[in-house]
Length: 189
Image (cartoon, rainbow, N blue to C red; front, side, top):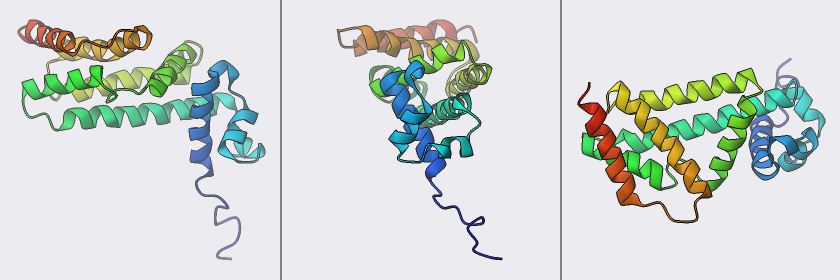
């Protein structure tokens, strides 16, 4: 029988809303304060929807963090996609470090929560490892392996420090550091 309730989802965007709501709750409350009730309330869905779509809070968190990583990886790729020379690629890396191209304040909070949670959850640890590899693969279109590894650490590490530093990021210092890494390690390739 065509068009029955079983064949047509009642709320086709519900699952995605739940994942988005989970990220909102994690950003506001931390993983430790994230509950089924808070997620359901934030998503505007019945509490039972969470257990309909997910086996438990661990699966919700893993899929929500995967959604975060996918979105941020796409942004990372877009930032570097138009670079046609090494200088343009260096400038794109500086943009990743100095601006919101890598991560907004909210995304940085979510990254901290994801990494802390990854210490206790194998699926999220594998997700974090995959995210690192995707970042390096994006950089590898412009730089040799050693440079990619060093730049990826810089792209991730500098914004972490920026999150806790009252002083604005010195763009000239970042540009000089990126260039020094590219020149210093690039000659080894």
